[in-house]
Length: 422
Image 1: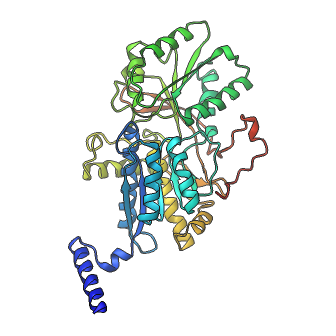
Image 2 (image 1 turned 90 degrees about the horizontal axis):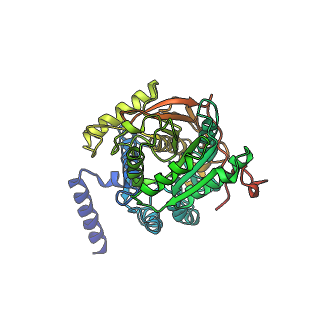
Image 3 (image 1 turned 45 degrees about the vertical axis):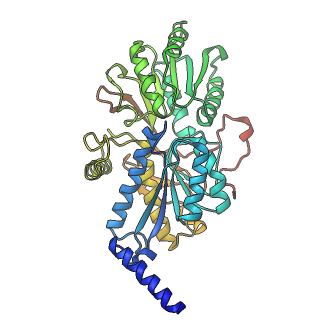
């Protein structure tokens, strides 16, 4: 009786799966992939498109036979720009959904929220956004930039003759760990270059802040005190729209006070009139406007995918950006590592990730460092154009190796460039 019930249950499950176009055998043969990005709340403006990038890459990989002969099955959750909820959703993906890997997070506060979950369960997170460094976990691969691959080169450029020889600095950010730690590093760097305390202004606003009138007025006053001033912006999420609108409203032109942003790309400028913002800067490791065969292929693929999937905003005006590229690189490197390891086992995949390479849309061959879980990345500085794209005005001669522990923070002396065990 028990055996016949079991047989009947399996037949019923098989019939239900077949009705959905899935065979029972196939259901057992997928590799689940977690997608942990905010699809609502203040960070949705930046993160939603990363979810779609993961899904596009999964479709491509599945169309070519999957990974080790198994199809990838995405499991998408929405942590809704709620930092504690990121940890809950990470637990759900790992413990309930049994995913082999997670691609996700944008803000450092979300990454810090999930980090104990990944370390305690010995699971894998691929994190695709520039960040403040000062962290190196065995269970995370950081495919975005460390400070020496974005923030430091951007400030060096603005200090140079080509960048306008800035002497005074406004460090303006959203009030959380990434801007505050990045600015701690930048303050130490500026002081090492002889910049006086009185020539550095530091301001923070909460997530979702929308009224930048008084802050822009303060910046105008600070910049009028005799020395060339530049603004370093670590504002994150949808606050960038009112910030750039107010910049335009108050006529703060790039020729007077250039703004360099580390969290503003093509996607964030979509809702802004960029004509008054021409010449303001962003520092990234990829821009959509880069001309090379790998990027031509990437942008065409994205345009076709966005149209086919009717992705809001992108079906008519498809845009790519740096965190999308970092996401895309991460998925393909993970695939290559799984195939090299012949396993999705975390420790085997970690070992196989060392030294992985991928021909990136930036035009360089991205390489995962053998030890420090960061990509070697080229740095580009781009000027905002009237159409919301970027004209590259400066770039590094080649890929830069990440320094997760900044040499400008004294307590980092002697720290090893290798991940902790977690």
